[in-house]
Amino acid sequence: MATRINGRRDPQADRLLSLVRSYQDGNTSVFADIYELLVADIYRYIYFRVSTKEQAEDLCQSVFTRIYEKIHTFTGVYFKAWVYTIAKHMIIDHYRKETIHHSIDEVMPPSVDDNQDAVLTAVTVRTYLSELPDRYREILLLRYIEDVSIADTAKILGMSTANVRVLSHRALTKLRELMQS
Amino acid sequence: MNDHKTLVLMLRTIGRETQPSQRYVDRLKRYLMAHVRQDTSMRRGFWSWDVSLLYGKMVFGLCLFGLSFIGWRAVSFRSQFALDASSYNPIFSNLLQPSQESAPDTVALESQNLLQELSENLVVDDVSVSPEAVLEQHQPGVVVERQADIGQVGEFDADQSLGSQMASPTTVGSSQSPSEPRGAVVAESGSAPLSGAVLTNDARKTYVVPTPTPTITPVPTQADSSEVYIQPVTIRMQ
Image (cartoon, rainbow over all chains, first blue to last red; front, side, top):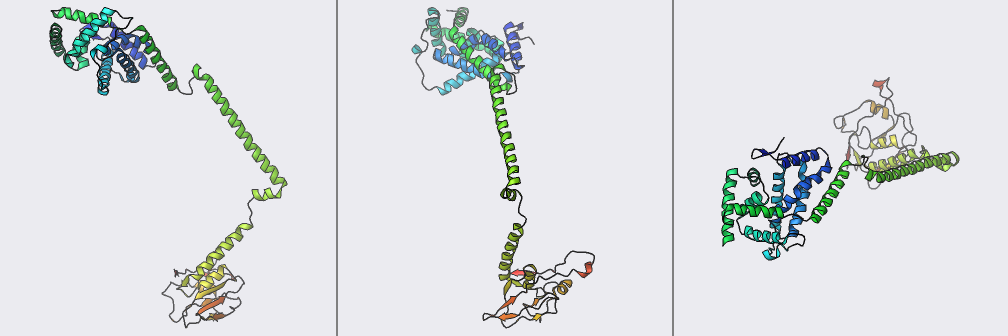
C-alpha cells in the first residue's frame, strides 16, 4: 500500500512502512534500518521542545525504546505520524516530571562539532519559539522545522488540514512580530 | 524577515542543520540493537538452536544427565542393599515384612480399653440385652461394674440365653416390661452360670463375666445364611 501525502507518493514513508511490516513478520534485524530513517527527525523534533541537548538525547533514546516496545501494535499506514505522537507524549511526560526550569542561556551550549552560526541561530529561534503559544509552536516545528506535510501535521495534532493552514499562518505572523519587537 | 517566505526558509534551514552528532547516533544504535538481540534470544526460548546460547544449553543438559545418573544409581543401590539384607539378616526381613502377630494384639488392647471406658459410662435402657452381655460378647473375663438402681438387685436367669434374646428383637422402650428389673444380665445358653453378684455398699453391683467365650446363635429365620444377627440396642450416654 503506497503512502500518499497531498496526492503524491512518499517514497520514504513507503520504505518505512515496508520495514515495519517486515519487522512485524519476525525480521527483527530491520529495526536498525527503521532507526536510521527516523533518528534525525525524532531528535530534531525533541531538540526544539526541551531545555538542553542532553535532555533531547535522553528523550530520543526513550522514544526509540518505546517504539521498539510498541511497534507490534502499529496497524496504520503512516508510521512517522505514529512515531511523532509517541515523541509528543513523552515530551509532555517529561515536562510533567520536570520541576526545575533552566534559563534559556544555559539551554544549548554550542558543541564543537556543530556549525557555530547554525547553533546560535537555532538558539535564537528556540528563544522566540518558546514564547509562542503551544499550538503555534507545535505547528511551526512540525510544518517547517520537521518539514511534515499539512495532512500529517493535521493527523498528529488531531485537527483538520484547513485548521492547520490557518494556524500556521497565524503562528508565522506571531513569530515575525516577536522577532521584530 | 518581513514576509512569511523568508521566515519559513529560515526555519527549514535551521531544521536541516540541526542534527544529532554521529557519535550519539552510533551509540544509541548499539544500545537499541543490543536490546533487540537480547529480547529476540529470550523470545526464541530454550529449544531454539541459537549459537550464542548453544554452549549454555549443552552444559545444562550434561548437568541434568549427571544428576539423573546419580539418582538412578542411588535408587538401584538402595534396593539391592535391601534385598541382600533381607535374605541374610532376620532383623531386616522382619522390618521389610509387616508383622502379622503384633497387630491383633494392639487392636485387642485398644478395644478392651474402649469397652472398659464405655461400660463405666453406659446406662442401658433396653434391659433385654445388657451392656455386660455386650461386653462379655466381645471381652470375656472382664470384670464390669455398672450402676444399678438402689433397692433393686439384679437377678440372674440362667435359662435366658443370648441367642434366644437375639432371635426376638424388640424395639427399645415399647417392649420393655415395667416389671423387668434393670440390670439383668443375660447369660449364654449352655454356658456356666454367672458367678454371682455382690451388692456393694454404694449400691453398685459387680458382675464377673465367665471366661468362656460365648457363642452367638445364628438367626433362625436366616437358616441358610451364615451371617450373625445382632439385636439392636439403644444406649444412652450418661
